[in-house]
Length: 79
Picture 1: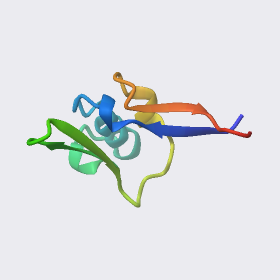
Picture 2: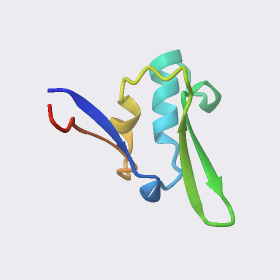
Picture 3: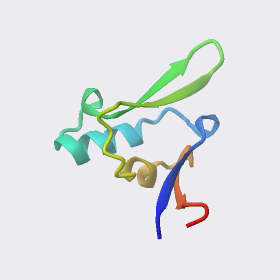
């Protein structure tokens, strides 16, 4: 069945597990600067923003690795 990724930045803890997984998957390097997903902290609000580079390959491995549920893989609606 087709799957899609659901993004809920409100659940993000800033652990960067998603970004590290992305970098390892796509570049075989444990380097946040190589990731296609980025986590940025808003110091004033105490929240995190999750953004994806245009180079993202949509493999969804970041979501599978996310421990907080900020990124999740679900069955596509209407599929």
